[in-house]
Length: 500
View 1 (cartoon, rainbow, N blue to C red):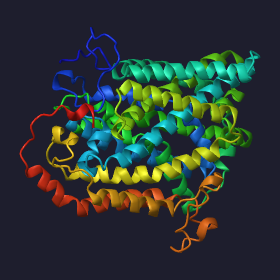
View 2: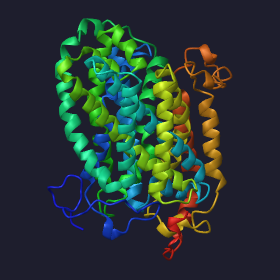
View 3: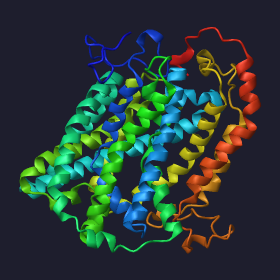
View 4: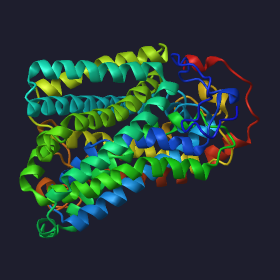
């Protein structure tokens, strides 16, 4: 199919919207469309959220200066989304969702372990984004005098959740259309927001923020990685799988990285300037990252701000609910994709109700969530990237669905590597603000890093350690297995893909 150049989302002009029927199955060549540049739209739309401004306050919260926070943020954002770009290449090489392609490394049923982890991460993210959109709407209505209490929050939650679930259930085509719209609308309104609050920046205050230690810098860098690219890496091939096989791999990497990184980088810079200029704003962001930003806005722009905030957060939640449904199927649930997405939507609503109406702290549990799940996802990412780097041929797609095929059923090496790296990683991170995670950090004292209250306690070294251990371990231990797989003749076609 030839995609006309005037359609940025890569759709044919006469394509009608319908519920996507594809689940874990391979996308046929006749249905592949677009060019790598079409990946810009979903990735930009999912990451243009005003929440990016809040990360400025989060970064400074590590006790580092503006320049240190800027460096940590830039490196963390670009590097982590570059990992997404590499994983996205697997999509166009294998035509299947990310969690199905992981079977080449983990085996058909062994891959259920990372699939469950991926499902928990994406459901968690969509819940956080839905809750933030609800709180932001209530804050805006409160400032306007329209009521920002329980009734407003209930209505906002219903509308946000409905939009997210409907688009996630409909699937790929509607997602691509919505993300294009979100990109344009939120991009314009975000620029207006920045112009309106620019006079609240005081460089003298920003430049006076003292510098932190190396450990604090590393902690901020890893937090940025887990808050951005490592939160998406397990879904990075879900959209590139619709590209033609002939699409440029460099283009896939470049457009994924560029589209996902552009908005967060710009928003981070401005967020750092705002948070560094006002200690009160810095503290308020921890409780309500989006709503706190309304304090410095003129009243007439509050409604447009609510629009840009909600659309940006929904853009991320939509991609998450789509990928969480695919991860749930890959974990072994045998239902149609849209049913899995609907089930995840129910969990998202329940979780959002807890965050909005019950929890009294956002930042502590949020950081604990990111760091804790960031460790096993980093471990999975290391294995996935090393496996992809070792392969010289495209995936044998039929064998991705056969436990008796070349990729095996439950190979022990990747499973043991993941478990070992996760155990090591959790021993090197701490989450003092989330009391239910105070068991972590058990290796900090034995490794001579000062224990749970020492200088390395909040450097989050466990995420980097898990990524490095599994990547190097897979390159060393997996090479012969990949070579053996690629010497086998192509497998005959199978129709098992819908059920495994």
